[in-house]
Length: 271
Length: 226
Image (cartoon, rainbow over the protein chains, first blue to last red):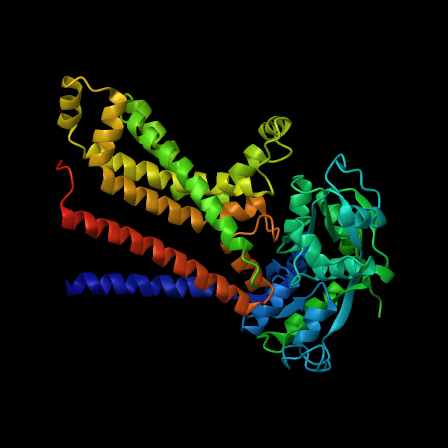
């Protein structure tokens, strides 16, 4: 019995030694990004990892509100790209008390930048069953028509922008929801899917999501309706690899990455 | 938070799907037992599938069937039947997911039924329907009741397939489970906890009622022996 155990132990140790020296350990960079960046960041991952073989990018895509909560609860994250200033402000200690009421301090000082600009768009399923032609028309239909609109919930940046648009038209969101004219998605991709599958008559998503899903954009919201849609990005204070994270953030602002972003409809913000 | 629509909606969806599943499960169990062996095995797998599939997979299949772009969905729409983004769709989702529970429990109960009782009934000239409802169902009462309670509880707690099929429209399609999820996502801790408590209370009441029924039966000894 003793002999068998010794042999097994020796084999196991041999295997450990072999595997340890077989690969250089890669640096894992965890990137939390808004759901609307799914396609573009996936493309960028391939390019970045080819140019930096010692880095492995691990993505988590979800609504920025959910990501902010996860970061707050201690999730491991090196880079955070939010679809709205609100979520980044809530993690940034340099933001004032109103924007960061919980006084959270997760953003690495000096790393926060405005990365991209997006547009909020009104989309409809193929064939436009309700024949909606603009946000103005949507407002009229919501007030007293028979229509079902999908939007992000109040934790989702695109949902927050939609709320601003509803306020711009003087519509009462709660009343509309009670009347069964609004249905909520938990992130922008869920809203997009509901429109693509024609489960709803229309939806409010980003121009980039419309492009990626092949949806026709009926109307685009102006800055007066919902403000500018800016995507901030930052390195997280608790990052285990702040230099690598900063390097990735710099790459995102560079030419190669911007080409990919602009292809789907983002506008890069030049400093 | 005091908008109690999700409670009313969950209860009606669970109640209606439980009734559908009750009859569908019993009849499936009864007739499946009479099939030739090969066919019985295949049918059994198909009917039990929603039990082992993740609810989101069930939801996906339901969308494939009843989605507004799908042939079946469009066909039904001509007759005014829509099952996506409205509360009747919730019945479809809950029924599909709860069906295997009723089916399996009923089958188990029927298989332990003493056929002599049924045959005796036949020699006495009783109709098959009479025998089914008055003899077989009476004797299998325990198992059938257990199945009914399980499927009601499952229907009440359905989330994945429901969320995919009917989404979350407050006041129209919100159930207790989708409401808890949305309230949690929008950081309404108190609201979410309120609905968790509501669900706990309902489940506890249902289980208590079942236990009471069972203990009462044992006391009066009114059971047909198998």
